[in-house]
Length: 98
Ligand SMILES: [Zn+2]
Image (cartoon, rainbow, N blue to C red):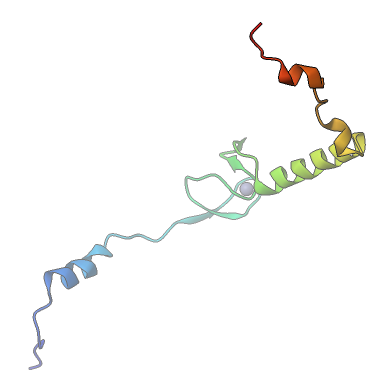
């Protein structure tokens, strides 16, 4: 009868049994957009959880940034014009306590 050559060490035995409690992630489909997602978590595709919008998605934030950028560039073609005006040169040298 074959017999193990060596004793299985405590470390090796415990590493094996450490994975026995792991359960697979349960995948369900979002009720809003039907994208696969893990159960009891918000949908990262649409940002909804149980039919309520709780998060802006990455695509929405990128779209907002693009529209804001377009609006900024449309309203002010010259960014140097938006720089704050420099104070008068005389006020720089005088001390603020007077
Ligand atoms: Zn969704």
